[in-house]
Length: 285
Ligand code: PMM
Image (cartoon, rainbow, N blue to C red):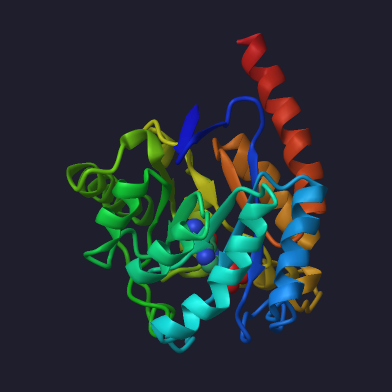
């Protein structure tokens, strides 16, 4: 599958794309804000590229459950200098934002992809993305970050998430975004219980039926902490990279084309191993 992002095409058949996470936020749940300073964020992104990240995702507003929204001006000040420095050095950069003004500033600074956890909730977002021809990630979330984990409810989570994403794909195309620029994401942990997350991860093929690249973001998330806790091991988020690697491999077996992770080196080993096994099995069919 090809994913068109601005002036480039990413080929997801050759290998699963690894998206490294750079949080330019003082309150990110998994890194304690250690990558908040501009230089540290750029250095982190460059290190991820050197480790094998295909894309570096830069975010300036935490979406952890209960996080407070960040004013647009602050978000631009956090994100844009980091995007500019990474893009200047040839890194494929995505900007993790739900605000069209932040996306526009990041695109102007060289971002190739807009990662929008509200799937074009800002009415100005489709125009910003279509004008620049950037790649667009449409993610599912029930509610908003402040309230989403209060009481997530679905009749059939997989059907509802797939149906929602189909609707957002139609909306994006109707608003002028090229279908080839789209990527879809079930939004693990965004308004989902433990069981909802596992149901989505075990049925990714349902989302893949749309014929678009599927991104999966499990890295260090709470459901992994719950699994490890059940196994008798209380973990901090940064201790969950082996568990993340397991989900990376399983997501690839289930059809994911892009994985969003904090620890690129660990994910790369899991992804390349899964890629080799999945492709060998496809060749035998
Ligand atoms: N998860 C987080 C933030 N942004 N974007 C996409 N597309 N998918 C995700 O699963 C996702 C995201 C939350 O994790 P972080 O605070 O560790 O970045």
